[in-house]
View 1 (cartoon, one colour):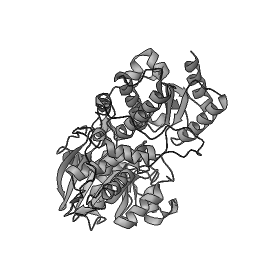
View 2 (cartoon, helix red, strand yellow):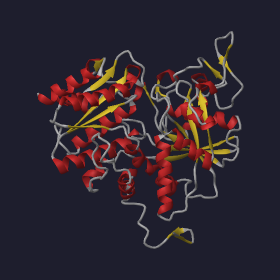
View 3 (tube, one colour):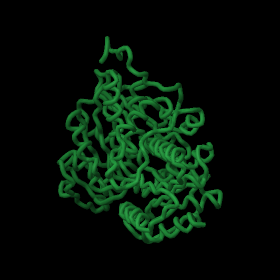
View 4 (tube, one colour):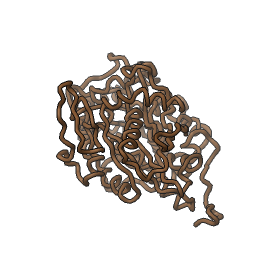
Amino acid sequence: MTVNGLPAAGTPPLVTQDSSSLLARYYHLVAEAASRYEPSATGGDFEPSMRLPELDAKLAEFLSPATAGLHDLGEYRGLPLRLLDLRQNPHTQTTKTFASLIIVARAVRYIQETGRPLVLFSPSSGNKAVALRDAVARALTSGLVQQEQLRVVTLTPAQTTGKLRRSVLSEDPELRALNPVFVLNDAPPEAVKQVGQEFKRLHADSGNDQFQLWHSLRLENYRAADIVRACFDYEFGQAGHTDVRTVHAHAVSSAFGLLGYASGIEMLKERGHQVADPSFLLVQHLATCDMVLHTLNGSFDRGNVPEYVKLPDGAWVQDASAHFPQRTWSPWETLEHTFYTHEPPTAPEMSGLISANGGKGVVVSLLECMERYAECRELLQKSSVTLPEDPRRLTEWSLVMAVTGVLNAIDRGLLPDADGVTIHASGTYGMDDYAPLPNEWINYVDNAGHILDTVLNKAGS
């Protein structure tokens, strides 16, 4: 309950410790959120408990990269724009840092309690793989676990090989062998999920008991960490202004981040805080616009994508829907390879939130992003984010997609009831921001059996 708009006496404090790390700052709330998503004992697949380690100085240092920033970008057509920068960890430059640190913290507790080695396995479009590898490297360098106790194995599609980075895990030959990076040859990006499931099955059938394998794909592994977005927005941003309708914009594949934000808002309400119900703007690309389709039509039927007509100059155009690109170089375009999920199971929940609290979906094209690139760059100069002057050097387009989607939505009158827009900066980086993983340190594979052979060979060496 609340008294005069403030939490009642006895309400647990929001802030666990005064820290720039959001995970350490709101640690008790993150731990409480995690406890609500304990995996089912009848699920069949191994997953460690959602319980987190006790927060001490060593763990707080481990969590230190999970910082964020809020920046006013000025107004566009009279609507205030704000940036929630969640990609401040220089070793990942994406919001995947938050969930990856919590996943690894859970793995650390499991290892400490059982003494059993654990191998994290993650199929990924690229960013999650980079973030998990960074989190495991931090756990090793901070002394939370030893290199034989915690390992990470990742599988990414060939289309996103350029996103893979050098790190502590790649520089040392022993760590490189213990923590292999696999790339799937000659397959669509989403195939990494199917091959990942097959690898998990093959491992179970192998009878190997040298380590526990954790296939960390469950949504709740991410939702618990992403509640800190709402806590930070409440403490420093707009979430506490119940008289203001703020739209939260995000370039999404499955919208894990926005669902985490929504869960955080509900937890704040439970604790007696007065918070605003957020509206959402989902931004996607044409190759996988499934969440926008579901929001608009209640289904994933691609028959609801407007029909495009090709012009003599090669561009495709349509004017039937304000929610889709007016101009594109291809009606089937893959703008950013990190967004590859078809028919995400999170769509009904996200569509329900938008139906209840307001919001929209908008699809953007590379042509639109290029046409607005200078405008995006100018807006973001008011924040901590720097885009390369030459867009050809940009290798992660999530944030440019989000900003372009917001500007297009405002231009097309899709946000008539908004008092402002908070853009979630979930990821952006260019060629000059990191050292790519050398090709000779990548394991190219065609099937799950190749992955199992490599992982078990190292485990037995």
